[in-house]
Image (cartoon, rainbow, N blue to C red):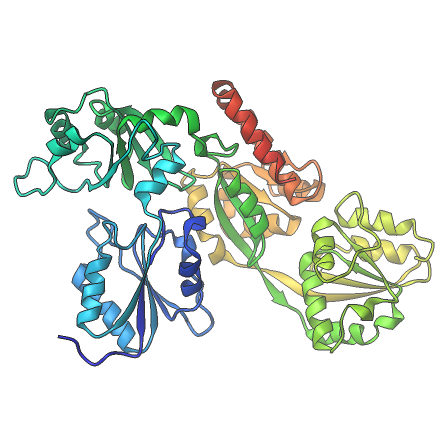
Amino acid sequence: MATKRSSGVVYLVGAGPGDPGLLTVRGRALLDDCDAVVYDALANPALLPVADARGRPSLHDVGKRGGIAESARQEEINALLVRLARDGKRVVRLKGGDPLVFGRGSEEAQALRAAGVAFEIVPGVTAGIAAPAYAGIPVTHRGVATSVTFVTGHEDPARPEGRTDWAALARAGGTIVLYMGVKTLPRIASALMAGGMRADTPAAAIEWGTYPRQRTVVATVDTLATLASEAGVTAPVITVIGPVVSLRDDIAWVEQRPLHGARIVVTRAQGKGGSLTGMLRALGASVIEAPATRIEHGDPAPLRDAIARLADYDWIAFTSQVAVELFWDALLTSGLDARALASARVGAVGPATADALGARGIVPDVTPLRFVAEGLLEALATRPDMRGGRVLHVAAEGARDVLRDGLLSLGAHVDTVYAYRSVPDPEGARVARDALAAGEVDLVVYASAGAVRAFTDAVGNVASRAPAACIGPVTVGAAREAGLSVEVEAAESTLPALAQSIVAAWQRRNPARDEERPAITRAADRQAGAIQ
């Protein structure tokens, strides 16, 4: 039976149904501190950690999606888990939904116990509850359904060895939730009706539940299979059968988010852009992050030297959040803190840069109305202390020289320190490039002129296959110079304003949605306004 217990451990973690926000806190903590991840096809790739310089954690794709030939056999998965644990690793076995709800997690736990491997089971949100909830269908409702039955749809009612009593389910009432029953749905529906279920019982098929691409087909138990086939519905699908489906008319919400159905690429530097991505996803968009550039730190010596002479400067000008972060790291490394800036005034190019300073206890003396270098220059030009003043300008190598040259023309003495540079990252844009080539992108978002240049260099001519959304006039100019069609220009150069402008453009493209559900659309507009 059991061999000598290994020093490693395996965590059987439920990945949830797809929306990364539905991963449990415990699951996230384990993914952030493990040595290996063994994951299924239905675990959202967005949940996977990024390996560090030592290749930790290692990632092991074992497929496990019904009907896919290249899926690993269960015995192979069991052996892999045992081997990794016996190597002393902390292993996360990431399984879509809940590991013990049609997930074979109990079989893996048995195999681990037999091999003497320590394990822990971390439940997840199962798709049979989450997908209907995201479709506006409660699986139980007072006065409508007081019970729910979860059934695997892989079992063919026509086979005598089947263990499901479909006639008994038809008589029992309540709600029936089928997991993965696309191919067998016609036969399951026939078996339920043969067992006494009314042909006009409401039914719904939910494709890719909780993902931005979620689709729901509503029909009856008699017609659902035909309508789902006509709509091209394919796995993964959760099917709900019962009177609760009728409640969708009252409480559907996912499809009513203002950017539902929009497929958007957000270009960004590696490790940046998350706040805009979060805004767009909260508004219902399917977002591909394309880190077409990555940040490389410059020589730290000039910045350290400038920090050693902070008392010499009258002003410090920051033109990006990255500049603030690197300056602050160098400040702390030098054994200093915010008090070292007491004798200098501070200028920030826009609210995001101002927020980065505010998080460190510094309120900028100047933040312009126009959130570009020209706006900061205009604001500083009104200051009487600029002529003859000494300015430390922390910037990116390769950035425009508008601010530095303008300050010099005002009579200021300017020391520009290039703290970092943005360099192309073609591999980071690979997924976006493939999606553009396949015609699967509605909009590409650019938050800087540099992002335009880096992304178009990384993906080539396919960049023009989707219109651009730009944060401000400088970015718009760069996009048009690159031959891109600009559909969206933010009303002001902030991420919330950019998100709002994208919502307005998408609603102009899809006016019928507003006409079909005016009350819900008003609620969606309120949600869009909440990001301001």
